[in-house]
Length: 152
Image 1 (cartoon, rainbow, N blue to C red):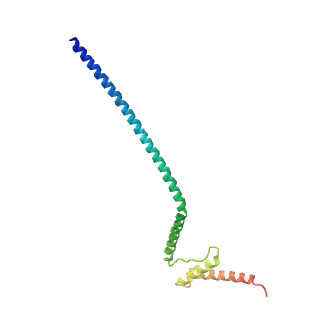
Image 2 (tube, rainbow, N blue to C red; image 1 turned 120 degrees about the vertical axis):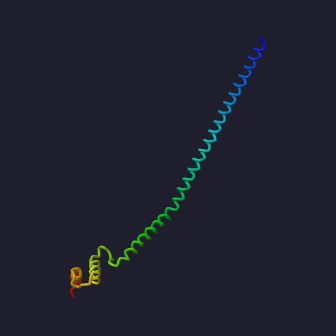
Image 3 (tube, rainbow, N blue to C red; image 1 turned 60 degrees about the horizontal axis):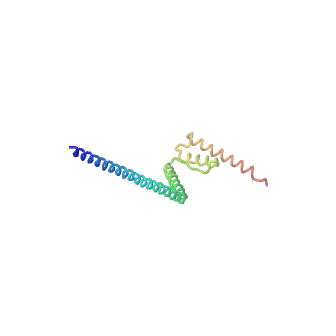
């Protein structure tokens, strides 16, 4: 019976030793696998960062090249919007467009003429005020012309 116990003990030790070696080898393989996995992931992340930096540089360069074109495009779009506004304004029959803002005489004459043309009653308040404006501007222009004409 003694030998049977000794054999069982030896078998148990052998099994424990094999198990320990297998666990050790499995732990080493797992550690090596994790290390290689991390190395591959790090390498891939580095490549991704390099690719993104290259893409950003290329995009920056392209944006620099097309910036003048984009500016021209925006100018064109602004002109189109401006023309759409003018088209809309042109459909308003009551709208009077005259010269520059600083040319008050022409502006007053244009508005007064428009009022006189559209007035149904020549004795209306608007028509009378328009006539007075025209007379007033005409007398100012006449006075200015007389003052600037050399006496001869």
